[in-house]
Amino acid sequence: MRLTIARKIALAVVAIVVLSIGTMAWVTSSNLQRGFIAYLNDMQAQDLDQLAELLAARYRKEGDFEWLRRQPRALRDVLDQMTPQIMADQGGPGRRRRDDMPPPRGEGPPPRGEGPPPRGEGPPPRGEGPPPPRRDAPPGLRDPMGFAARISIIDAQGGVLMGPPDFPPGMERKVAVDGATVATIRLRPLRQASGADASATGFLREQVRDILVLSVLLCVASILVALWLARHLLRPVAALRDVTARLARGQFDARAPLLSRDELAELALHVNAMAQALEENEQQRRRMIADISHELRTPLTVIRGEIEALLDGIRQADPGALESLHGEVLRLNKLVDDLHQLTLADAGDLQFDWQRLAFDELAQNVFERYQARAAAAGLVFTWSLPAGRVELEGDAGRLTQVIINLLENSVRYTDAGGRIVATLAADSTDAELTIEDSAPGVPDGAHASIFGRLYRVDHARTRERGGSGLGLAICKMLVEAHGGTIDASPSPLGGVAMRLRLPLHHKHRSA
Image (cartoon, rainbow, N blue to C red; front, side, top):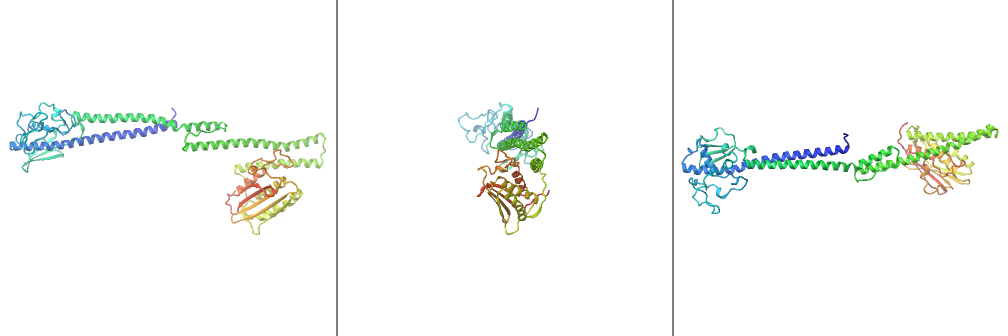
């Protein structure tokens, strides 16, 4: 049988509850037995006081204890004149009856043969002794807890009147007559309930049995509750297991239900977020494959057409035909290089040559080189640089690639007669480069999307305006590798404003 999490939880709860209940039952029964024995000893201590009074009264009558010396029956006769504090006439726990009370101190027992007054007439008149011994009582009531067997009586001279001479420590009472101690009574206390009478041990046994029965019932109830609790707690886990199994099969539309508000619910939210990300990545992957196929098919189709025209003699192999083929090869090579850079970036293998450089000088060199390119496209390109030096740590080649990509986008997508304005500024922490162009701009809501891979506002992907759609994605990747940010927003000139921020002191990881 497989030990599932539900079974583990149920077994753990059952083990803890059974151990707790078992320990509680054992401690309770042990304390009950100790407390009950202590209660019996306390009651017998009161009976010992009564016995001392009876022996004092008999001593007054007899003048000595010779009648008691080594006479167990005489002691039994004295004990028959008293009722144990914990026993009623019926043998059960109860209070001492008035007609069983010992006579007042100094008065002796009544003559043999006289019985107690009729019930309801109250105690005997003063001067009369206690009731006669109950010789018709069964042995268990005459000596319900082995009282006589645990008694030792020592006279004033140290002689043993009753019991063993060497008696273990226990309860002790003095028998005093007219202020003088005539004897000492010692009672060995009860150590276990088996020394008590049948009714007392039966009562104790019944209580222990009830505790054990209740413990068993509680254990059974805990097992049932543990099984239900384990299944209830693991319902969200079962749902998560089904969802993750569907995700493993490629069903990225699977979502986990929220069945609670605890940590498992948070886990379900994380699983749903992961499923959402996987679904979006899968859709992006499919779109990317389709876009890459489209981008590769376009130059390959042109190259194929040019070559077939040359082979069929439709077109001569002149410099114009070769230049057209060369341009398509360059376009195809550019697309492959961009894809290669993105692949390296995703794998963390893109190499950087970190060094301290003057970013204002690097930007000025690129601006000067691109001024002729902008003029050829019919655009006016101006820029402004800060008065001070702007130094930062970075890869000069990668940052040059970023600026060229941004300027190339502006030149390619700005209508002839428009403007391009580049502004470099710096504060105490960052350098900010802004490149703005004139119309046309980007539709509202599309500024954040233009950094996506193979995303282009021009869905027709015309060869005149469109590139591979990977330039801005590469720019974003390179800027983030330098610890900076890049974003797009509407330009006051009517086009797009690209804003690039780079930290002046970036802690990079050496390649």
